[in-house]
Length: 92
View 1 (cartoon, rainbow, N blue to C red):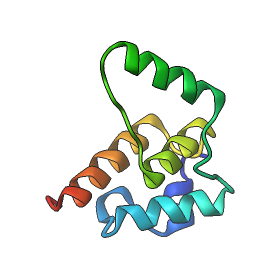
View 2: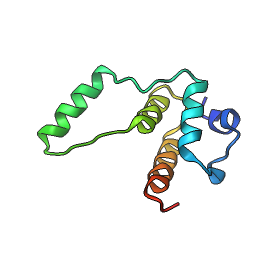
View 3: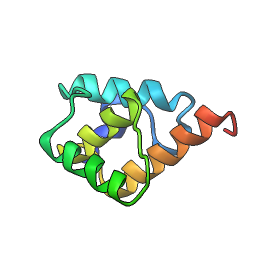
């Protein structure tokens, strides 16, 4: 399943020009939504207890769903997330 990134989006890890579009396309292909799960409420409560605030946007929640579903490997998830954050910050 993890090789679906290249096959479904037609994009390799080295050639992502629009990371958000690749993540959204891959999620749509596999029926992944950005809906929260019960474990997310626990994670939010734990983060608040540690005086941290972690907020994922829609695209990041889709990426999390892809990882939970086994459609991307950990390596792909981290690479996509890093590229997405860089693109969002205007670095890439």
